[in-house]
Length: 283
Image (tube, rainbow, N blue to C red):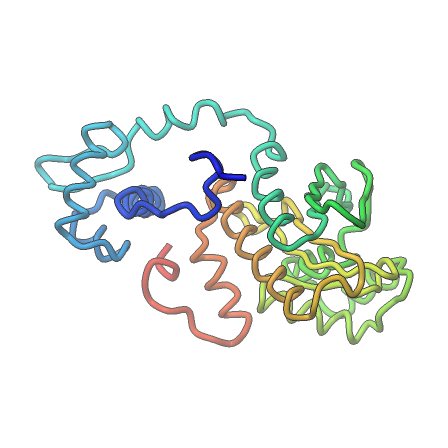
């Protein structure tokens, strides 16, 4: 069967479009207007190409140009494009990303809402598997500190060890880890930005997860990928964790205005590595 143009299985990336998007993202993250040279350096786009794209974006009102200062900033036209998304349900906006992750990793993808009562509630789930698969019911509730999402949540809460132990002792697992192992997993999640639960919360299930944060660093959403034990290799589970972290970074930025560079710098600091100078360390 031949694929139609809309079904291209290996779409070609259009460089000009990719550069324009990179420029818009750069301007959206800048706290003040910037000149062409600064924007080009920040995006890695050549100065001449950057200038031509900015001129086009200015014509379309997606960026504003200050003729006197020779600087650019994000324009009101971007808001016009985003109007259909304003007020939309967060789960609806995130669902395409869940579907992508599910298809690439052959796992059930779950979106969890973090509540004020230290619970996570399943608000959406996507599975593209055509054969044997695991499933969970919408509205399922779990304590925030349990499982793979819980390890990420605990990493962000950064509680004193004795207080973390109290929270851990109140949790229920089908195959409980030791507190020492749990605490080590939490510390690793603080450095890596993702965590695993390999048959401890639910026997026979392997879970990877990451957490979406708001501008104040508070956990708002959890994203987990769940598979039947043995379906994915250890390397595949690790890749799932990395992809979940990257998606959580992107969603944190798109929904809550948290720069991906900021989240990456926080992880580097947790790992004892200095944050590099540049876009991530400056915003």
